[in-house]
Image 1 (cartoon, rainbow, N blue to C red):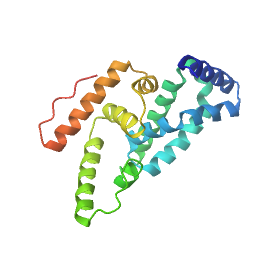
Image 2: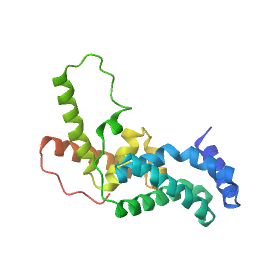
Image 3: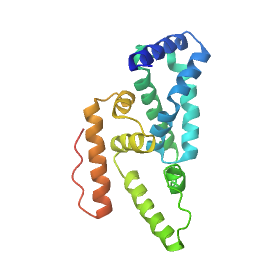
Length: 194
């Protein structure tokens, strides 16, 4: 299915959802679930909080989908609802530590015979990288998580965050540079606005 066909299908589902079609809302949420989960994780950094935020987002979508003016802007509208929900939840709670195993479990290669020292060094390195990712400014952490944890394309990230593709690319370059600088102990540059 082409990008324009997907967008038209999504717009049709949004129109049906605005008329109260619960099946359309469910289809919209299912189609956008994985990137939304990644976006919420980039803000909350806690799997349990993400689950709670996803439930709140579902409720808000049910209650507010009829306020969406342009059906073709569903992804960016959903991203905004998700961000507001996550930020609200984060404000109500004290940030909990993130389990490195939860974040990297899918992306960690299976090593059959590593000795204890190798495992400890690897874990320490992963924790350093995770800590560097957590310290990124939120707008950089969002694109980083969507790209490298959720494996989304630049175009998909741009659509979700309602940004130009070039802005997504710039933020990814800058986020990688900030992580590298933090890991190598180099001074971090002032973060530009983009």
